Length: 224
Ligand code: CA
Image 1: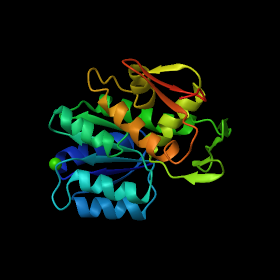
Image 2: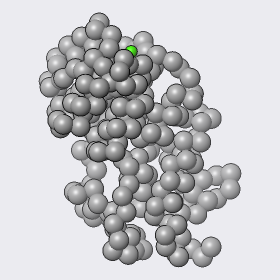
Image 3: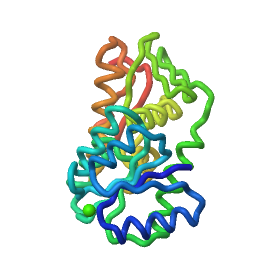
């Protein structure tokens, strides 16, 4: 398992690197945004730890640059415990975030969680209505047409398909798709659902994602 750390504080980078290497991970370090983006998009990593405040390119820009090219999971590290920061990172497609300063054990738990989630994904194709998900190729089609999704949108669709016809509350979605407790900012869920809808439902007459006011969503073929 290869991990890239993009972090400009040498002490933090060295401490995280050492801890992860002791756990058997192969670790590279980039100390500014440009190097980080370059490494992230030219080498293959299983996970990227990304600081938000970086010289060169800011963490957000690095994240957007990575997402334009690949779905490698990103755990971002932020010194600012601001809700807007967390929401922004997650909306840009990060898997999870960690607020500095953090204990290594906490970082390791997040890292293992993200990597486990990636490898636990079922390899059997999922089908519902005219939607098909091929987990091996991470390929989604609807009525035979390719639908390009971000990592989060893909995870969200997987959750919906495994729970088709069931009431999926925002809290359940937040816990299962982001593996986090959002407390009051389940807005992240709504934004992700809106984006998934725009790609998966808007181009087709039959809508599959239905909003249940005040509760959450149901994924099924019910009439509008
Ligand atoms: Ca920094």
